[in-house]
Length: 116
Image 1: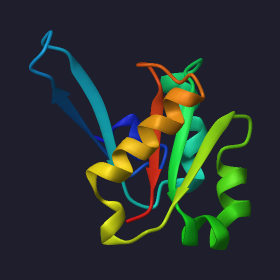
Image 2: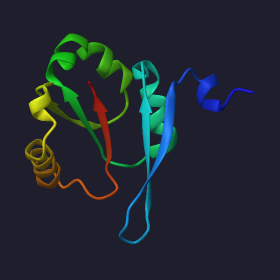
Image 3: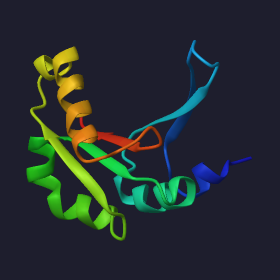
């Protein structure tokens, strides 16, 4: 039997991340080739939340129209980053957090990462 995600063509896996403080769980969805289904997925599960998209600059430049089309109707803040191993660091995480805080994004922000 196919799940609703499979029927919709989404190739995503849901993981639950447990935090030690306050025993909270946060869903993390990891997928492959889901760009065309992104708006429907986001709208159906995260309607009303502020959205930030952390994206590889190269992917944004090559796929900008497709990405904009896939997020049609969704107001998102794009945070382009250089897609290198050096960007996978605590310093980059802090820069992204600072951008989000400066723009008044809160704890219930949905963060979408596009890239490698």
